[in-house]
Length: 135
Image (cartoon, rainbow, N blue to C red):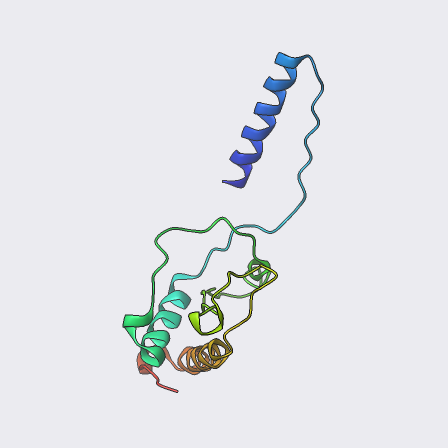
């Protein structure tokens, strides 16, 4: 997908350059690639999160996001799954992430730690013995 996007941008730049009799130079930085979660790890996190916080609270993301995330470099070395925890809330004004007024709802740290700890326990068990955990 990234390669196609780069090729399309280069093609557009070349076309605009020809039409306007100008020279357009386009450069792309390296950046991070797309996150490809391991399906079995996604299911472990999903199962654990349902057990820890309840299925009614979990929102499935319907399609991939286009953001950039350094987590992809971890996945170059081991299987994993990235999930969005949600750390803004109405209790603290709810400003969006990556804004100067963002203030984390610290309750999300406790919830995230519980999900990660329970997922690690579940992951470390033989697959035949896996059960849901509530920590």
